Length: 415
Ligand code: BGC
Image (cartoon, rainbow, N blue to C red; front, side):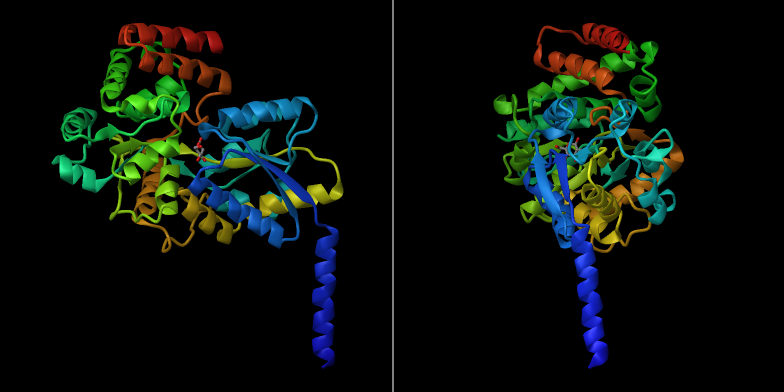
């Protein structure tokens, strides 16, 4: 009896201790589609279970451009959120400005240097110190397809861009939209970088990491632009401004055959109750089966006032790398866990394929950072590439030769 009473007392005491440390985290993100919201809700629930308050700061807009604009104005006003979805080289930009807080104690307690692949932990550090926590790894060079549409059109899944064009013509003739696409700069860039990657990861890295003038002006780059322009023939007339998840729903409901999009698209299929390999199929974007374009989502932590808010922020960082969160979040998000050696049994065949490809490509040099998703270049260079790519896609009179010239010049001016 006494033992039980003591037990209860200690539970009550530890609950009281936890509550006295309870704080609020304000989290800025752009995860507002069905699959994305299901994923971020996992983190929200875990924080609430840990006794904290979650203040949601969602800024709609795929790719995060609007979210970044809002974040800048909040930071300039001296009132940044506790955490924000910031990625790749942009983390360094915020670090340079002195906004980010040090997470080394959480990282050390959680063994982040051991449980994270080097390519991930490098990006999470500013000046050698952890300032951000990674939630996942997305593969960007995916093609999502509706097998029923292919069957009806008598078409086969293309594995090169030439085949894509041949099969897309059949699909169009059968009355379907071959390529579900949304005319937004980041979506155009996602398609463009997939085509560029089909020229090989050496070419890709030279263009989008090395920013080599020679590569940017090469015949290969002219060909990339030409193939990219051909894709216009295969999108429907309503593509302008369309959100990526609406494009995914066109594949889900059988209006369109394919979408070239990162595996956050899988989150939409999952949210719609669809099964990989049955209702939809995933293939690497044509010509890129050996490569993996990575896009790591992470929450960077800002300096905040108040002991409780700091405790809550560190709890947030800690929870993100816990195996339970890594599994549930990524099942909903469509991505793969960023934590190494996680059990694979709950993940589907597309996720298994991404996991295998991530490991294989990291040993062959074919693991490349996504330019379209802020992993390869800083935001200035990325903006310059986006402008040229999207203007070219929408301008019937611009030739591929003119486009490479504009690209090389715009990149040089932004550096
Ligand atoms: C992010 C994903 C997100 C997608 C669409 C990407 O840049 O990394 O997490 O789902 O944009 O908004």
